[in-house]
Image (cartoon, rainbow, N blue to C red; front, side, top):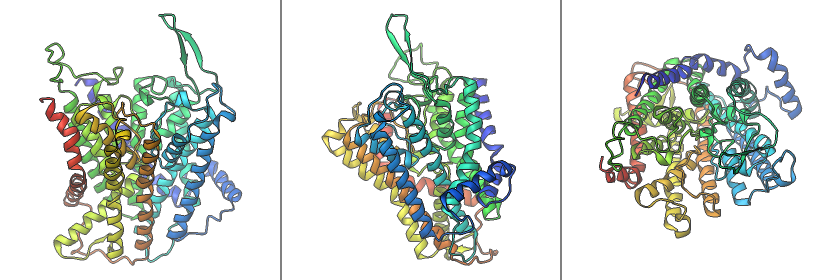
Length: 564
């Protein structure tokens, strides 16, 4: 590694961690309707949205009403996007006269963007019109991220409030999350990306002649606006097929750095938002410490693995350098590794290189980041409410060890809360192991794997892990665009999204009803190094006990077979 590599890592953490406390406090004030510096500009727009939709922002909802509103909104978004993709050939802003999308692929894509997964079994520039990209995908990028933020805020209120039956208003939370939480940041990032050279145009694709005399089509489009929200909203779906490895999506070292930092900027800030809700920022510092510990473990492992020469090459001339096959050669190995760890630690899924070319241990780190539920920062809102589920599990385990009724911030965990936590533990095993086993056992679907042996198994495992974790990245080489995989991966995305959201909202409603007992000397502290260690071990043990056998058949077996 060179000085540039160390500078990149330091700049990345500075861009994420320095603004996080201030942005976290801003989000708390926004979501609670307090006045901010944006209120004079966006306040009238917010009120206009409520009048147009017939929503009374003063009326709050029970967790059941909140859930029904969320499900209705997401169903409407799915239907709209599904219809746009099926009918895009007849709709305007289709400069290249692209045809309608096949229905199973349209189903998969609509589910993918509605669930904040952004899994893509197509190449954007060859399959989607400008209208489909903007009105279909970009809109869902905003509202799917806002949905995750709304669910997190509902859980924060459930933990922080005392004996109440309401958790806020979903329509109000969605509006504020989108209007104040996402749009201003996206506008700033989009302008920056345009400055760096990312296209933002409705012009036709450009035709050029290569040096060999062949005709080349150079795709354009309104890319900068979609790239901004795909990064900040932890969506990840690329405007172009190869995502942020495309020079139009990621043209410079500066765009690479800011796109990379944008992936976990909001998830890191929301950790501090939670601290404001529970009136204890020590909880935020404990959670961010756990996230950073897991991130650094994975990052260090991946960097070590990628800087090892590949013994299969058996070439002394290349043994002194890191293998560059499949890497982002413009920015170097460190930039590729940092992106692969960040995008899988968050439920982002964007890539600036091909994960199929990662060394086995680096590929395993990406898999593990997703298998633990993408709680190492995770998606906007989704990462933190997933982490809070692990916090409650750790508190429950601590209660068992010391023989006390488990409680968190004065809220005792009863049988109902533990049952809901157990339900969430089944989400990833069902969406990854059950659906993946079905795909691997059938000869037709299994033929989508392009490599033999352990690496081929890793391809399939990665695809179903990415779908269940609502990540969206993939090992290149997996032929996912078949009716079976389109439908099965779509099912995995639905399980991975709503399998968490529904229990989380029920848990928020249950905790909101409870009285808050005073925290005494006998209460288990949840803000010190001991709890951070317990939480970290809990996350690794739950993920390890569930997925270690499959990892042994995939990346671990491949690593051992290479003779390292």
